[in-house]
Image (cartoon, rainbow, N blue to C red; front, side, top):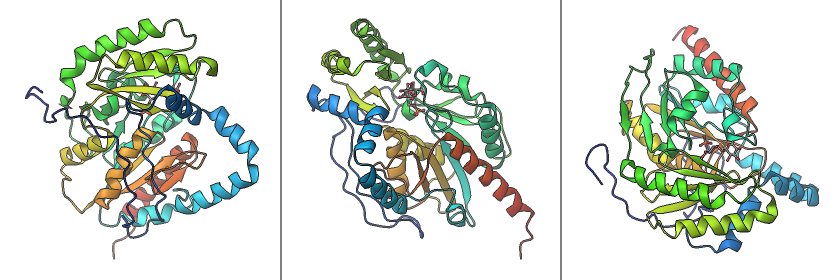
Amino acid sequence: MTKQGVVVPAPAEAAVAVPPSSAPLLPYPPPRAAMRKKCLQMGPGVGGWVESMRASSPTHARAAAALAAGADEDRRAAWMVEHPSALSKFDQVVAASKGKQIVVFLDYDGTLSPIVDDPDAAYMSDTMRRAVRSVAKHFPTAIVSGRCRDKVFEFVKLAELYYAGSHGMDIKGPAKGSRHTRAAKGVLFQPASQFLPMIEQVHESLVEKTRSIPGAKVENNKFCVSVHFRCVDEKSWSALAETVKSVLKEYPKLKLTQGRMVFEVRPIIKWDKGKALEFLLESLGFADCADVLPVYIGDDRTDEDAFKVLRRRGQGVGILVSKHPKDTSASYSLQEPAEVMEFLLRLVEWERLSKARPKW
Ligand SMILES: O=P(O)(O)OC[C@H]1O[C@H](O[C@H]2O[C@H](CO)[C@@H](O)[C@H](O)[C@H]2O)[C@H](O)[C@@H](O)[C@@H]1O
């Protein structure tokens, strides 16, 4: 690794299952569900990948739910006890922030924008943008996304936020200062910069090799590459998995993880959304600080790295956006982006009111 901006060597990340911690992280958290790491490394054969692709498909989730409607209801109710709605438990969530600075971390796809077939058309609504802008007026706020940083900025269009693109491998401070953040125009951290030429290469190769698979879409996210299969016929999934696997054989310094109907090709450095969260807290002056409450909202497997960091620090609120029960290290849940917006607006309103309240 070169010295500039790079502090992380590139050892292979072990695909070990993380044992669930039984220790409570917040004074109030609901018990944590057992966590199973679902990161796909080079290990599983194509069969395992296809099984995992199926598991991430909403059609399959619905079919499974229809088959076991009763059992599913029970499962969901039990899951909601462990991961209650951050809206219905709003008072509990904000009670944890007493005397602390809230810092807000937001994933983009599936959290601020609804999931759509075309990744280039995953627009955020103006009302959501207004909600995020209001949040940023009151709290330091960061967008943490798997997307290329420039691309996610094009969608969000708010200069007062921190942005961590490429799953946290490309971090930039706000171009415009706010009451909570001073403008920190430059790039703050790019731990995978030496992988840029390799990512370019693998992107080209994946585009070329998947061309014959209808619906496959390869997206260059600068320090990582996404291979989408949302629009690929299920009959071609194993061909796609086989193709991706064969391309990656040539790149032992890259690893494969899976998101929502997408393969994510990433450098094997030990850097993820969780590390980005810690880096940003440090940049904001909250390293090893008890007076901060990070609130992280995300919907994807890659957001689990951030939820785990909050668990480990025993500090903060992890909120998973999901309609269905999922293994997660988050403490709370919200069903969809519309609920995320409601939560953000309530947070702003609560902050306004608490400032207006006399301090006895
Ligand atoms: O970390 P995120 O901001 O959630 O980014 C993760 C991936 O999001 C995008 O893909 C997902 O959203 C698309 C648009 O709704 C959808 O078509 C796709 O199936 C989802 O996986 C983005 O296109 C990827 O590059 C990101 O890695």
